[in-house]
Image 1 (cartoon, rainbow, N blue to C red):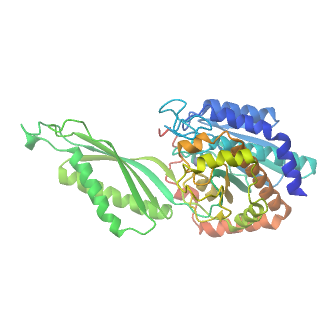
Image 2 (cartoon, rainbow, N blue to C red):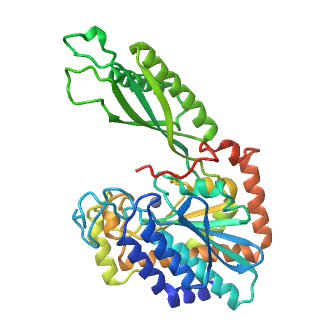
Image 3 (tube, rainbow, N blue to C red):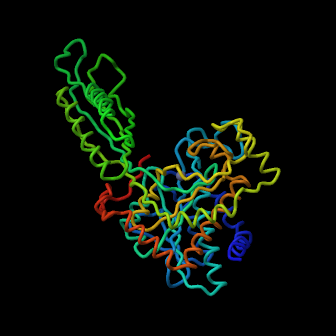
Length: 451
Ligand SMILES: [Zn+2]
């Protein structure tokens, strides 16, 4: 009965959120500059009667509140796009709207509006059934690298929330249990420029230092835990003339580890290698400058079990013939081309997240699910995902996600002991660690765009 009523509410109001998702798709904006998308989402929630509040120093974040009393249910949403993923809607070959411009290649137009739809239908349901409960929709900026949610946590946004529900668009169903801690850091080497042949003895090469730093990193790979990764990009070689000793060189390093404790240990080791490289080359190293950092994901099996039952009840996705033909067009370009399947009928529970939703999971028990919006085999962060972001299949996934999250919340509310169990498990899985101590990003730091 409850699920049917939620489905009816979604059917009744979905047009509002589909329109808003299309609007956000057409104004793709990068981390912390999501002004048009933010205004569209905020206006939509205000028009629906939510009370909207803002957070200090964050002009593209808002909290929309409705209902009253306890429990307080958090719903997370995002609305940022990715650089270089501009693509014409529904087009199955690369054809950008504007070459090099941002695009919604991670489906955050759907993610945000699906969360807003969930908040609204849940509120309507509580009202119609005379139920108590406060709904808080969190419009979170800069998920892509900028970790907007970290700054929202630091501003106390989630302090009174009992549990959070969240979803991500994808090519299948999933439940998240895991996610690594990630740090993105810049290292800068400074040397002395000189004529490479005329006075080579006067030069001290920053580029040599950077190369030795990278070589040192290759050697520690043998002595790291299996779940640690280091990736790098040389972001500045110092110049294009080989007959100049390069006085400056810079690289960006992404380190992933099991949790923040392991991550911090790795970062100390990286610093030692950087200093060693500088010493060997008689250069200096500046930094590291912490660009961004994500925490590991704190699993909550109480919420995951409730999510699983709800997902199972609505599988498989039912598509119209037109939607099937549309998805087939995109399957051909996916990495799993030729499987002949429109969707796989499994709930994937083995895929870790690299999202700042994981940071929220440290302060509130959090459910994170994936719902299909794209053809099987479509990779997130691809132009093919951008292309499918306004389709009827994408909207269908978004509306289903809204219903699933509302049903998860209502199942939790129906049995208050489940909320208590989720909180107990949360406490147990933290093992005495606190977010304030573990988070790599300084509490006083202000949000900064990373690209
Ligand atoms: Zn995403």
